[in-house]
Structure formats: structure tokens, C-alpha cells
Image 1 (cartoon, rainbow, N blue to C red):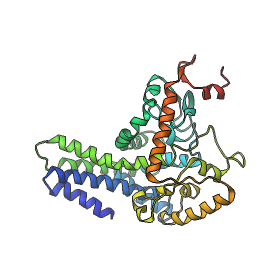
Image 2: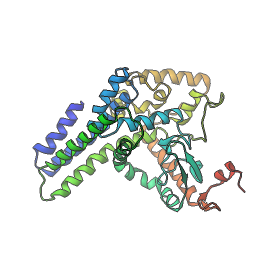
Image 3: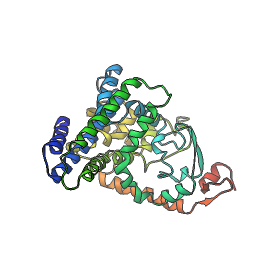
Image 4: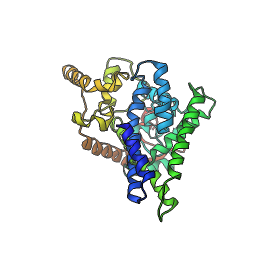
Length: 340
């Protein structure tokens, strides 16, 4: 399947001369990246061979070389996300200021333990977040470029990364093969603009992956600090509170690449993807017994819920007032910091 997508992309791109064929090649390439992300996700969790060294080696091919996503950066970010999912101060996967705020609790000022800097709601953040429900899908269409940048920033830093030199070689290989593919497109009257459009279309299609990722957590509960302090925020309950599944038929599992069962994945990160649907049945039964909410909307319903949630936060951003500290504050921030 993966080989067919990549081969189809290369054929339409290089062996055909029509503009439509080239754009079809871009779509296939984007679909290839989206599908390979599922394998990269499994590999990153050591869920394929379950041999750490082997999965890491495969990750260089699947992640860095074929898709341009640095496995070292992904593990650094994603492992933290799993431990403190949807924590305002600690989870990098919901720290997207000044563009997105998944909750009004983000407004004000907090220190990001992952990025090691203060995050403030300044004028730019207030303005952009106010329109985040309109910006979400356009930004997701180009989000992949940010992942390339994040991977290289880590590789070029002084921070330790396992197999750093090999990651750099594999990532450079990605740049080389993608650049060559685009350079040798037999373009028509549009010239280099056709090449630019090819890159944009392929990355826009691959942007589906980022929508899938955001659906799992953006509209769910957030909290301050760290969890697991008592029965109310113990491991199982926190994964159910901060994560949702997507209700889909089994024949669409290929499309969702395992991300439709994020609840089970967060409970057992190394559980192989083909076991997640069965695990979902067990977890649902247990949730009914314990009275724990198990949120599993349809794909389209989850999209509407996400946009509605982001719009609600956007409307609250428009009501923010500049405080004495120079940044925009919310009643929640004032309450947490004993203001007023």
C-alpha cells in the first residue's frame, strides 16, 4: 500500500506531462506522508518489533528519510505529551500561542516546562486567537513545514539526541530526494510556479494528519500543573478526561492510522495498532461499570465540536483586558494568581 502510493506519486510526477497528473502525484505524495505517519507513530512508541534498537533504526528510514519528521524531536515532544496530556504548563501539544489557545486557562502568563520560557497573552496572541476558529484549517494545511523546522532546530542544538548524526544524514536525504523530485517535474506553461504548487498541494493533503492529531485533545479537558495526585485525577481517569476516540467502521481504520483509538493508545502506548479496536471494547465496558465518560463522536461531529470549542475560546479572547503586568489577563488567571 505504501509502496503503491509512493510509486504512483513518482509516476504521475515524473512520467506524465500534464498539469492534472502532476497535481495527482502531489495528492498521492501527501497521502503517502499521512499514511506513513501511522507507521512512524508506532515505531516511535517501540510498538512494531518491540526491540528498541531495531525500531529506532527503522525510525530513521520511516521518519527522517521518507517523511522528513525527526524521530528524536518527535519522541522528545510526544513522550512528554503522554505523561502530562493537556496540562497547560507542561504539554507541548497544546502550547501553540500566539496562534491557538485550546482553553481560556491559557490566557494570562505561564511558564512552559517543555519550551523553558514564559508564555504570555500579548496583543498579537489576543488578536490571532480571536480568529483561531477561522485560522485552524488553513494553518493545519501548512503545519508540516513547522515540523521540519522543529526537527532541525533540535538536531542543530547542543542537546543530546540519540543517533543525532544519523538523524541529520537521514533528514538531509529527505531534503535531497524531495528537492530532486520537484526539480525534475516536466513543468508546463506555469514553470516554477507549478513546482511551488506541487509542494503546497502535497503538504496540504498531508495536513490531514495534523487535524487528526488535534481532534484527539483540543476540545477535551485541560488542567494546571501535574496530575496523578489522588483518586480523582489518577491515570485512567485523566486519559479519559483529556482524550477522545473517533467512532468509525473497521473498514476505515486504514484512513485513521490508529489515531481513532487515542484513548486506548494513551492507556497503553506500546499496544500494537491492530489490537486497539478490541481494547476499545474492553475499555468501554469498564467505563460503564465505573461511571466514567467515554467520549467517541463521529469524525464529522468531532470536527464541529472542535471548531465550536475553539470559537468559544476565541470569543473570550476578544474580551481580555490588559493588566498591570502588561499582558492580557482573564478572570481565570486572576483567580489562580489571587488577583483582584
